[in-house]
Length: 219
Image (cartoon, rainbow, N blue to C red; front, side):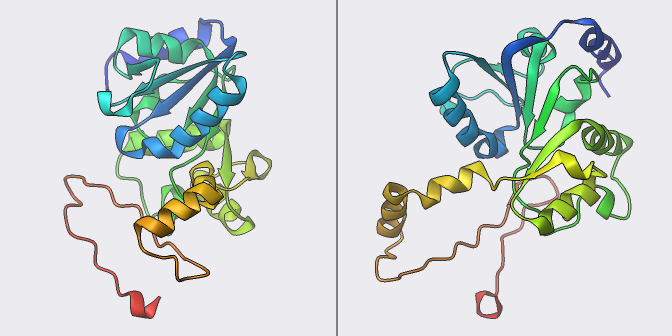
């Protein structure tokens, strides 16, 4: 763990939080989970709030304003002084937070089919355990159904009243008529009245380089 973390946590406990500042804590390979919600907020509340992104990997491909590295002084400063902290994962970026004066919103990056958090036999590291525990005690979660309210609640040991059924913001794009037509045209699906997308999370990591194999006939 970074030796600067205890000092940064101390700063988080004493620094004032600006009510009109919202920070998105995002990882590069899961940007879309928060990106759609960010676009919505900027469009509807851009004149009332300041939105900042801190990310593990800064890239020009994202084409975003107010984007800073999670390891930069500016990125950490914006994070510690924001009233609202929005995230979609459980990575090292969470380690800097300890103040209960933030309002934490966890969108997560998809509704899990695999076991995560406290539903697994054991955590891979103590840091991972601490992150799930911290979010479970302090964050609000957003899920797609009563079933996933139970799943996320168990995975994080979160308070039941802090889990809200809202759906996933990024999935709302698919339901819009303009995007529906674009998707049908791109994948040549105009002849079908209903279309079901199977889109499992696939992350390229040191331990996950294999090709995805699916038996669609048995779905």
